[in-house]
Amino acid sequence: SVFEAELADHIPVVKTNLAGTRLVGRLCVGNKNGLLVPHTTTDQELLHIRNSLPDEVVVQRVEERLSALGNCIAVNDYVALIHPDLDSETEEIISDVLGVEVFRQTIAGNILVGSFCKFTNQGGIVHPKTTIEDLDELSSLLQVPLVAGTINRGSDVIGAGLVANDWCAFCGMDTTSTELAVVESIFKLRSAQPSQIVQDMRATIIDSMM
Figure 1 (cartoon, rainbow, N blue to C red):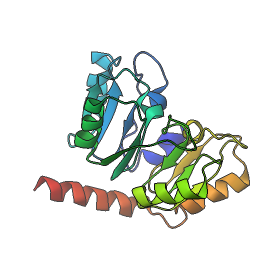
Figure 2: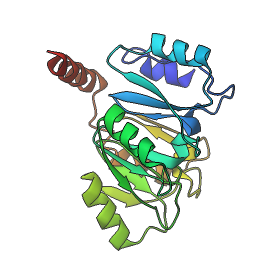
Figure 3: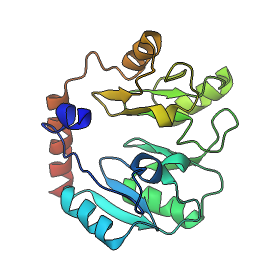
Figure 4: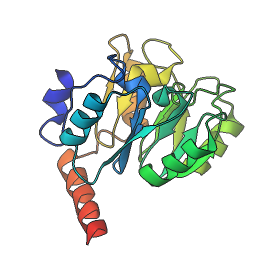
């Protein structure tokens, strides 16, 4: 796959189902510290994921009514934006397992924050109708630069058409050259070196374990 070709030399690439479906991006959410999966995840799927990831990445099943966690939560290694109606227990789990500050937010009036934005530790893209005031507020919460934009030739559902980490991004085939330029710019991808970032990440993990 494209993902394996680009990522397998640097980080584990895990093929799995969640709750018997292939919608893994919409059902789970995670960062360098942990991965949250819905309560509908089977024991076999959970075991496979735990065995495939490094021991320092905590994998946790979450008892939450709003089980499409990827639609309801947007997160990097430091901050999470969450659906306003998530349980308080879920909010605590997000904070503990992912090691982040948690804020209940909407994106341009949309409660599915995971669907309508995508941000990393470098920057992020949000729904095109996000106001300047909201953009400034979100940017100060996340402490990264943000831009309002689209993916897949004008789609405002950013989370469904884009995945990104701190050195590369993948987007839908319909994405225009202008949209690609915005992605490369806001996520600072041109200057990103995966080997250095992964080394820094491993060094941080080792430091935290000692």
